[in-house]
Amino acid sequence: MQDRILTSESHQTTDYLHWFRHSAPYINAHRGKTFVIMFEGEAILDPNFQHIIHDIALLHSLGIRLVLVHGARPQINRNLQAQQLTTPFHANRRVTTREALPCVLGAVGSIRMQIEALLSMGLANSPMYGARIEVVSGNLVTAKPYGIHDGVDFQLTGEVRAVDAASMHRLLEQHNIVILGPTGYSTTGEVFNLLAEEVATRTAIALKAEKLIFLGQQQGVFNAQGKLLREINPQQLDELMLSIKETNPIQALHLKGAKEAALNGVQRVHLLPFAHDGALIQELFTRDGIGSMVTDAHYEDVRIANIHDVGGLMNLLRPLEEQGILVYRSRERLENEINQFAVIERDGTILACAALYPIPVGNNEVTSAEIACVAVHPSYRKSNRGSQILQFLEAQARSQGIQQLFVLTTRTAHWFLEHGFSAATVDDLPNARQALYNYQRNSLVFKKFI
Image (cartoon, rainbow, N blue to C red; front, side, top):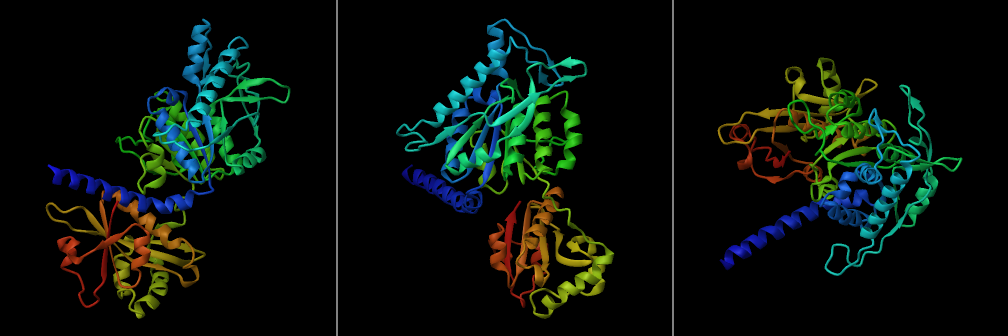
């Protein structure tokens, strides 16, 4: 029994060390960056919210600049019900009457104090022990009336006019966490009820944030077949928004904000489930994450090669073949395998290339493919084009149901290790690929599960 306990503890320690070591590049990459995190009022009522706050405190301790934007729909509804008031909705936006405004302000103020209290916890034996977090809020969002739409007067419902990005940057530079609610102030001194999703989106754009994160009820975005879409470009969101507009209007607001942010300079927008313990940490510090990511930094300049690229490929590959870095490929072979290649091309010059070769597998073998012929033009080897084309082929492999990638290399082992591959042996290759292994080249073998 004692041996089993020690073995279990040893596995847990190994898993922890593996995760921690692999999270280090993300910790380094995120330090000093600005993230805007928006969570619905429903998230605040969820039992997991205290864990979310602990994770937010952890992000803050790692040097990430944080702006938190909270919703308040259920809390406002509860206050309205207590006062026996009702407010209609039109196009998923509340019509805020003057009588209802105190209920809105009461809910928003109560939530802000709740968040501030949770971020102030420093109890011994708690995840936030010893943490001192300064939390600030204020009149950082200027609003204007939403006006009349479809004949409906929205009264004290507003929309974002401007975000005081300069003041927010100063507050963030002083290591504060900024909290914003779904309210804004007009230049005439009025208070307007806003959509939290719009506040978060406009804030992320104004701050030029690296990330905008929506914590919602869904894990992310799913296609018609029920498959989670790990990465989406903003152009794909229109159809998705249309399909869920009636069944899930809140997520439609998240997608609308994601599209606007991604098209206006926010590098990554993440859609995560607030009820999943550790969703923020898993998304930000692991390779695969847990939710969906929207980005306009897609691979528009990476494409599948065509027959017209053969000449450019030969010009790029020949010097590396002559040095023995790559295996020689004749023009005829390149023409026959052209659809296996991806290229980055600019002004008629192939700047980078790589090929994806599915590997025939037998029974009980994992679906696999080989990435080969990775090459970057000498003038662009200090850019990220090699990484970009590798990520493109990994996405292609995932879409084909491939679970494991192999590379065989004689000169670039460290580069593949830096991109998530791990050392393997010839015996790890599927049988069909083992039969073709060239022992004379003695290439090192690396693998990666995707």
